[in-house]
Length: 311
Image (cartoon, rainbow, N blue to C red; front, side, top):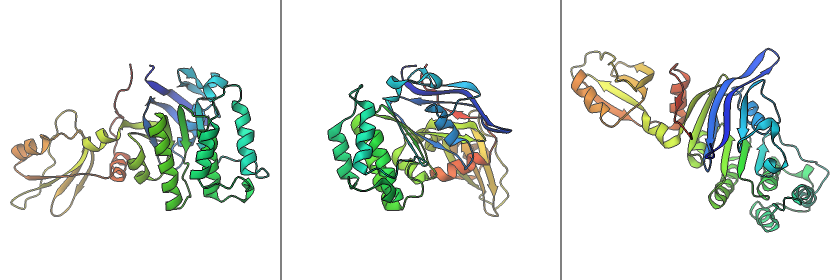
């Protein structure tokens, strides 16, 4: 299990009569950048807060660096960075005083890197004399990122870090995170609504739906396996839905006056030719953007798509 940094094992969390997480299980491999995707109120924030012990599961277990989340201590937290959309800083302090105050928590571990903090201050264009309360949303989010990168964590947990930021600031934010991931070999787990950000940053995706894990896969593997096949009869007759081989799951079927479009999980390069031989129809393969992949999964009831990680 050394190659798994975060392990969610059958995690359940309730708020009154509302069950936010329903036996959620997934793994975050070391060195990966894993995007946590899902609709509003699907359980993303609850899950991430359980990972950093801001919430406790009602049942199941979250392990970070092999330690149960409820037993995380200073040694583990010195290796975890956490940036939240809702993160609040003292508005009365200056940027410089906020950095100095945060730095004091890492004096014993000596993990705080003054040179890195200064470099991030420059790159993020933060005024050390500005009051935190006067910062824009983008500047405040940048300061939070600096505070969580300057002690060189091994795991970065980001809960909608670029939410409500304009496109330019969001791009700058993501580029900086990418640079640190490349330079430090960090493991990252982040939630976002922006699927274009996922395709730019992530190498793994986890889809949470109604508090359960629906998809857990490498991004490239997912896009390679989920395709739309367009079937067209040469004589203009209505095309019957074909039987697919074991291992291929139908996610969505859409019939038009001209063709039959079937989105499947389990595509392989030999499938179109096999379908042509069996059905006698023309088969075109349509690559899908990530947004369409998850819409297709949201409209289907196939079992969780999982790529095994670790032992």
